[in-house]
Structure formats: structure tokens, C-alpha cells
Length: 410
Image (cartoon, rainbow, N blue to C red; front, side, top):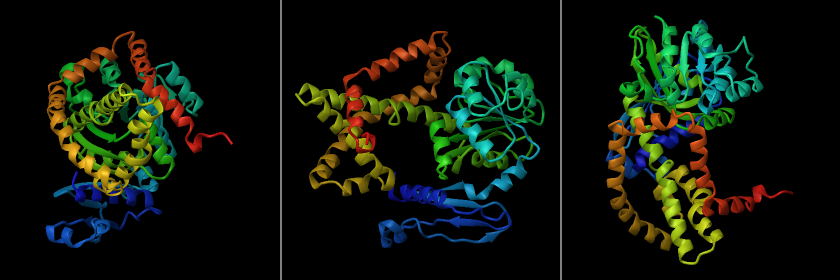
């Protein structure tokens, strides 16, 4: 990611977390960040994102941000203060299907925003958790069919496998005038595998928070808000996009960028299998095992592989970018990183191309549906997770984390 793109994202994050008051609906701001080589050359690093032009207008705010030379429209939380959210959805019942991490996080945030939200869940652990968190059976908590019947906006936040499995149960309740909402393009984009084909006479929208449901909830409670993407698959009412953006704010996003169902699911599946989860575990494991094979202790190997990364270096990357992290390390560390990252890039680029193709051709979808639809899925998953948890690296990590000052008992 270029300096300019990274700076644009940082500015959005700062603006979202620092917003102290709602913007009146009669006066929205139009902020345009313009970039040229001359501007970038003459501005100090910390000022790259501060060229903002503001105009008063009488429509919802629209921000066009320059992400490294490509201009994209971004919608911010200030566009929809709570009062406007409540007015927008005053005649709606928002049915959240599923009370897993994403369903829980979004539902609780909608409830805190004082919208009319109910839960549709199968009885079991998720149902019991919903009851403990204040959802009332027969009033705000229902089994799936009844919740779908009551809802005007059906927010399908079941697992991808469950969305496919229960589609024929849900579809009859998607009558004309209703809205079908997803947080993942999986089911619709890979309809040949999932069987999920929405009726033609309803709006179909997507809001995809870029993080786990737990993070969606925690950042909302902190007054920050997670970033997310928004898309429209079908716009029958003529208001699908507007309502999708509003729902994005309602479920806890701080800002939203535009995408499509296809682009969302491709990037999501690719990222999870890549540097967000799959690749990082593989790299951690490889580095740790080489250190151990050459006589380094478990504590040293873990600290040099995971602890320093997550506690010292990654926060610097998150705050100001990779180049800034490099600039704040020793010259020896800088030289090694600059010399070796290209070798890692050259070795891994073909593997990432293979991964993207596996996503695009549906291989990853079919594998996920097959594995996650099995009756013994949970038991098989526990075995796989235990293999990771029981590895010496992560057992060493438990001991290291206990030594952090904040984890020491007073």
C-alpha cells in the first residue's frame, strides 16, 4: 500500500474515533482529498492527508478519498446520527438471523442504537446466550421461521453453511417489499454451490464489517467503530443503497467503502487464507521451528517470532505503516528487512496467485461447504484447533503472555 493510500485510511480512522458530535442532517460536508506529485513532494509525511475542502450542502455527506491514486467514495458515521437512523427505520423490524459472533455484535449495536431489532435463532447454546444478554423469548427472540415472518429487513448472519442449508426454509418469508441483508457475499456469489438465489422483487444488500463480530461490538462500545464495505445486489425500491449505508452505521461501522458482492467475497476468502490467518500461522510456525532446531529456547523462539511482532512491531505498522515501523527500528534491522522482504515476496507471490484462483474458481467455497456441513463438523474442528493449541509454540506463548506486566496479579 502506498504512503498516500495508507495515510487516507489513517485519516478516516482518526476522524471516526474523534467524532464528538452528530452533524446536522441539513448540513453535510463534502470532503475531497486531492493528490498530485507536487503536493506529495512538498508536504511533510504527517500532513499527507490534511488537504480537505469542505462545502455545505443539503444532502448526505459524501467523501471522495484518494487511495494511492485511485479515488473512492467513502461514507462516514456522522452521516447517520442515531436520530436519523431511528427515523430511517422507524417502520421496520430488523430480523437478525443467527447469534454467533457476527450476529451478536451487530444485533447488540442495533439495539443500543434504539432500532427495532429481533433475533431469529435455533434453540441451543446461541439461543441461551441471547437470553442471558437480554433478548426475550416471544418478544425479541424467536425461532427462525417466526422471526423471518415478523421482519421487514432479514439480516442473514447465519454461518455460510447454515445459510445454504436453511435457505429453502427462509426463502418463503422473503416477500415483495422486504430487504435481504448479508455481511458476506459468499451465498449469493456462489449460488451454484449454495442454492441461494434471492427473489427478484426484493432489495438485496451487503454490509461487511472488516473484523470479527467481537471486534465489531468492542469498537462500538469504545465509541470508535470498525471499517466496513457496502454493496447492493438488487435495488427494487430505489432506496437500497441509502438504507444499506444507514444499516452499516447502525451495526457499528465507523466508515464504509463501496464494493460488490463478488469483490467482497473474493477479497475476504483470500485474505483469511492469506496474511490475516492462514499465511501468518504458517510463517510463525516455520520461523519458530527453525529457531528451536538450532538450539534456541522456547521462550526466545516465541519472543522473536510472535511476541515482538504482536506487541511491539505490528502496532507501529497499524499506526503509521510499514515504512514508519522500519524507520523506527535499528539500522541493522532495517537493512535485514529491506534485503529479505523481496525474497519472501518472490517466493510467496506464486502461492498467493494459486490461492486467489482457488477462491475465484469456487474450490474454497465447495471445500468450506463440505467440511462445515458435516454432522461431526464441530468435533473435527476441535481436533484441528487442538493441534495448533498443543504445539509447543503456542504453549510457550501462554507462559509468555502471563509474564506481561498487565497480566501480573497485584
